[in-house]
Length: 283
Length: 236
Ligand SMILES: Nc1ncnc2c1ncn2[C@@H]1O[C@H](COP(=O)(O)OP(=O)(O)OP(=O)(O)O)[C@@H](O)[C@H]1O
Ligand SMILES: [Mg+2]
View 1 (cartoon, rainbow over the protein chains, first blue to last red):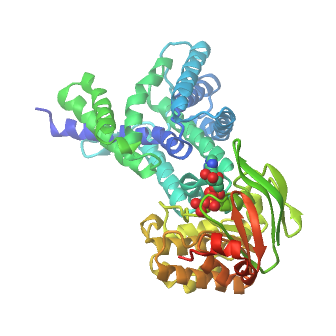
View 2 (tube, rainbow over the protein chains, first blue to last red):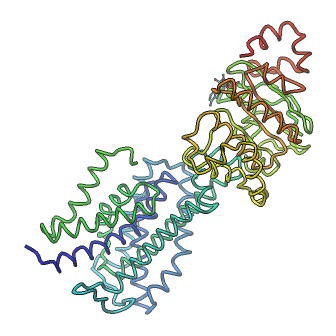
View 3 (cartoon, rainbow over the protein chains, first blue to last red):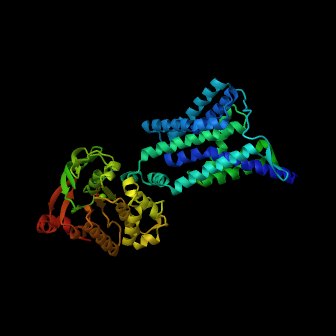
């Protein structure tokens, strides 16, 4: 039988992972719903950002948050460029899976070529130490990541629901021709979504670098949990992504604590398969 | 206001409109009637910039607008009430109206526009937070009309507003169309229901198989035996 403290600590670390899953899934869920692009290259961008943050820090001493600020517009431009190409070559939903998986492999090789396949770890922290809540420890870095993840998701949700931009985006998804005839710029909106999604990848990547040891092939270890988060949360739903991320994060942590650590990856994949089989209209 | 000259539109190799010419004067309500598949919707969609013209020109207030994208036409004062309403069905009534005044030029008049359309359709004021797709057919048609009015159009294209509605609702819809016309908006009204359409129009055109077969006042059209027998008989 495990102790209450250990259980509490597991739940806490599950909540932290859950926030990260939501942050990493946000761009994916937006482009899936609003662009009908299943953008697996989102994971590649996350890792590219993570490695750049690591490298700027270890080689030049740049603070990761500074690198993050610089990467946001640069990644936005990458996202726009990607969408321009997808429009130009008329990449549809199904083709997008294969094309973006290919892109991911290319970026992985690129990362490996530049930074080698060795494990690397950024030495910097945003703040050292942890917040003590009773007997539980909450590292400041993780708390900060959660605050950013939740803020970004809530801001995106508010933007989708309460702004002209959000209404235009939903109208454009609902009925593009009619939206256009009322002046909605469908194409510009698509580029904006793709750019924003890539910017979210930059933010997520910096936190991956802050919290995890990096190696190029670990890109793929994120597919299962993040895709499960996106599908369970509902495509295009930032708040759904948070709820689903937390659920999956805690579920995973409990599996680790109660069953065995090696069982952890089974939880999200089982969930993913169950969603696809029992709830196909989710896509 | 609107002048169409020798317009040809086709879907792939199949011609849907051949050599159609017509004009809508400033402040006029022109009715275009014709049977199923005559090409009426094709005509509206081509004017709205949703379909490319294969040949011919479309002028709005004297300016050649052939080939301009829908957005540019909206900027020039054109608004569409499409066949089958085509609301943003997952959005609320008021969000639909917001898209109606999405263009910066109309956005500044949002409050005024909402007051006007809610006054015209009080039921929509009550349902403003309801998802548009869950409204009845008649209420959806009201949203489609209100959405177009929010754009403050100078030329309104209305495609089969009576489609699928109960007779009592149809009567209301035509009253509203007459009122909008009276407020100074030029209207191109497409209808299969010839009797209703010609009752609110000064002039009508008959379209069949993609070509205009007659143009004239309702009385002139009615006086032509062939037209009356073929197109005006079934005023449902
Ligand atoms: N998207 C399309 N692709 C191919 N052909 C089409 C398409 N839309 C319409 N057509 C054809 O073009 C012709 C004109 O159609 P259109 O919809 O303009 O007629 P309509 O007068 O509006 O008919 P209705 O009264 O049924 O609305 C028809 O023969 C139709 O089959
Ligand atoms: Mg039609």
